[in-house]
Image (cartoon, rainbow, N blue to C red; front, side, top):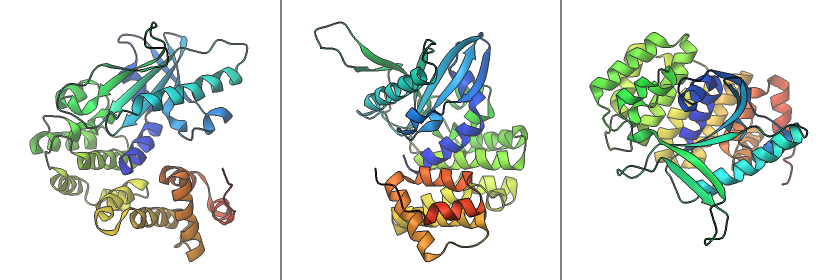
Length: 309
């Protein structure tokens, strides 16, 4: 899913409570305990998709998949992740029952006709009763601006450009609402980044992205360019990728993030290492390392030979 996936993973890490409240049973108390991170789930390399919760005091797990579209392989991906996750939770607490797990596929684009509310991956024989995995489908792009607002969280305002009734006027109101409700300039920049990246998805052909970029910049007077987060670089990579080719855009994005973290441009060898790791691990994994590692540790990581899988 490219840049949208990077932006969504980034904002989801920052606002897990907003994800949990959107998908928890209505009227229940929700406590977020954190993202699940174990040795077994590291194999799957998508660590920030499962949240440990308490619903009315009872342990639960919420697994969220952001999907560009509801492709035929999405049920397989959900089922595979659940296998890793279930095994990880069993190993983590072998004497405890595995908490109930709910999976949700948040779909960003696709057909105009309503998507089903539930999906499934059958593993049983066709003539037998169903066994396998079922998951909820949140076709967020098929919702209205009012429905997204009704979720009560500033996070879901960033999804408003996907709404089927998005207009320039309604998006101007959303931009103002994000400005008013975000706690800090950095939080506003992160939310606007997701807002603009999702505008580029444009599932309904609204063609609003250029106007929305201008509106955000007018509101914030260059906030996105001044804030040292991945957002600015994601937008730039999205735009440049159309002209320069995907790998060049990724290399530029990662190189600029390296510069922000270290205070200098990467050397030729470091640039080569960044791109090689992006090819082997995926740009999202390299972005995580650039955000998580500090100074010398980051330089050493780039100098180390990659482990062969």
